[in-house]
Image (cartoon, rainbow, N blue to C red):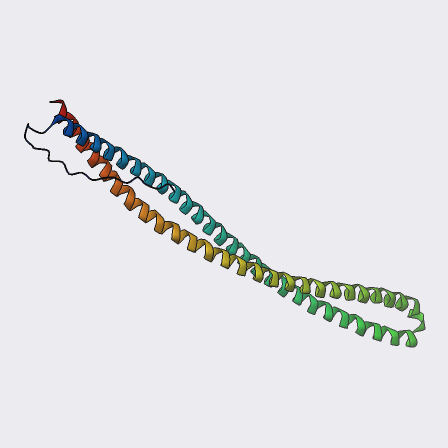
Length: 213
């Protein structure tokens, strides 16, 4: 931000004797004109600085909102992971029960093979089919266990990401607070110099009219 101009404050007696030299009056008017121009320049500079601060506050506010949105989505995803893990656990229990039933049937049918030779061909076919089922269920169980491990890994990754988002949000909130404080200062300075610029311009105009009389 640019350095503001210095203004020399000169007190001028507006109501004076006609004996005041014209050259002194012209010099006073010139100084008033300079003061008015400098005040206007300061007002413009503070207004420019205020515009920059307002833009920075808006950008910081957008960053905070975006981070909050990401955190909300992350929490939703984590809840879905827990739900899916629970469903996989229930499926694993059901598979264990199905495996147990199949194993019981295999043992029973092995006994029936010895007792009933006539049913040997049918029972052997049934046994082969059930063994295939057992192998398929076993592979499904291994796959489910691997998926459970994958979900656990994703939960850890999401926890890490959430921590990073918390830190970024905290920094963004600090930055927003700092810019809001600067905006308050620049609003005050802008108002102050706006008033001074108007006052200097009014004095300059008044003296200019007096000098023309």
